[in-house]
Amino acid sequence: MNGGILEDFKNAWNKPNNAVAQIILINVIVFVFTGLMLILGLGDQVRPWLGLPSNPSTLLLKPWTLLTHIFVHDGFMHILFNMLWFYWFGRIIQDFIGSDKVIGIFSMGALFGALVYILAYNAIPKFENASHIATMVGASAGVTAVVIGAAVHSPNYTILLMFIGPVKIKYIALVSVFLSLIGTRGNVNAGGEFAHLGGAMMGWFYITQLKQGNNIGGWITASIQFIKSMFKPQTKIKVTHRSGNRRPTKKATSSKQSESGSTPQSEIDAILDKISDKGYESLTKDEKQKLFNASKK
Image (cartoon, rainbow, N blue to C red; front, side, top):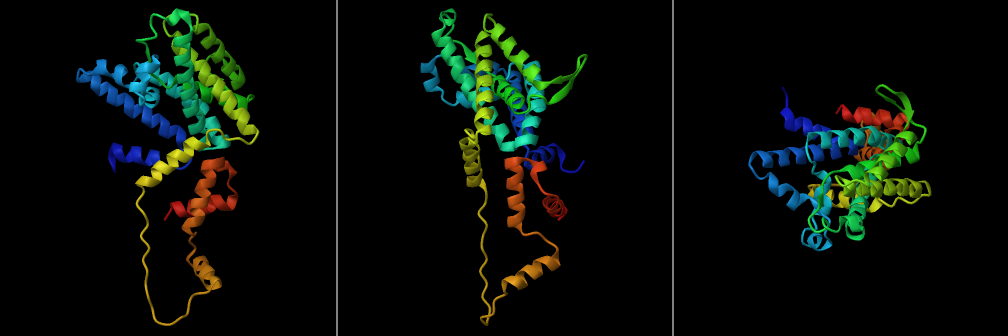
């Protein structure tokens, strides 16, 4: 084998317009990490330190749990079904409106779901006895936001369900919300169901605003890009001196690029930005060809 597992992960991570795979990879890595903690006998520390507490006072002492709880799951079936749903519906959003929208909807859905979860546990009397000890883990609120977001954007998009056949995703979204509503009346995962409903509301609101020209999740992707830029090595500019005052004209420079058959890196970067913003299908035939040629170098 060439490269090994780490190289495969790196290649999967670095593909453009690839937020769905990246988020799934993060979830899988955290799941493996928490599994190792269980093997080492430290499993009892996972929920207290990484799970989201329902008590606001406890949350103030553990603010990182607003993020970490999203990527922690209670067992294999929990992460399996979350990631399957996220893959199916996340790909719809990614293909139609771009990779950055997947990140925005998933992140804001998870955060708003967390807020609704905390409000429910501290405002509904039935949770009074558990509000000071309950914790929540899982990406379900973010996944629900993606499901509803996809249904609001493309309600008549049809997928094939085993034993059922073709079904429009708007009906799948309605059933998902209905089941969560019923679940809030139970005692096993009622708090989690409230989080699902919070995610559903954010998925609807996000796409509704996006259709009006407002990308309310833009600050999230901008923050991520800023953090990434802090870890990218700065390009060193090499300055050379030569005798004479002659400089190549713009026409000569353009001719030289044409003769070499290469596309300037700035143009490739612009194409990649367009993919990230609007999806691969938004590219023109010429842009796709340039990207293909650059990938072979």
